[in-house]
Amino acid sequence: GAVYSPALMDLTVMSDAGTMFLTGPRIVRAVTGEEVDARSLGGPDVHAARTGSAHLVAPDDASALALTRRLLSYLPSAAWLPIPEVDPRPPAHDDPGSVVPREARDPYDVRDVIAAVVDEGTFLELQERWARNLVIGFARVEGATVGVIANQPAWLAGVLDATASEKGARFVRFCDAFGIPLVVLEDVPGFPPGTSQEHGGVIRRGAKLLHAFTSVTVPRISLVLRKAYGVVY
Image (cartoon, rainbow, N blue to C red; front, top):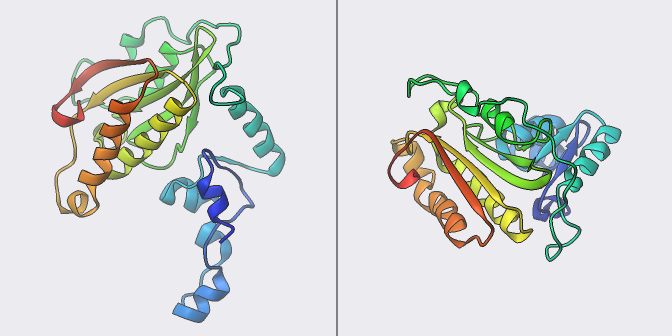
């Protein structure tokens, strides 16, 4: 039951040696007969790429602490305090539009666009390996913290599926709770059709993202890069 503690946290940083699971390998073996080691059952690769329970993964404990310090630098000490501000930096690129292909079907990495919008070197991506068709993270614009949420055309053409909706909804609600403005970069063809998405709860999980965006009170700016259709828009 102690593993619920990190799951209840706003953000979870995991070291490479860490593991999280409800029932350990010995119990799994006794109950199901399945042979599995601790890392395969609940190691950082599992929680970074498959469950989304780890927001950030570091190679060792010292790196995890350094990553935590960087993460905290974006956040106020309490939800009712102003967001931190530092000296501004110019973006890494002068022209965000130059990295976006004109052809609507051509893939590109939306992180290149983010780099051209936010202060150079300030973007800290969260849950990078989970629901990769949606990119989320903290950055700074003119020295002030913002939350970035962006469709990723380089992964599944940037569709917004059930898992990405859940990922985005939690991040949007977190930013609203701490007074962090939102910068939204849209380039999305829609929801993917099919039984896997419908049976995977795309209605319920997609509604979470819709509710999150319609209920936030922080400033938010949406930039449509090439396309955004239907209910996803």
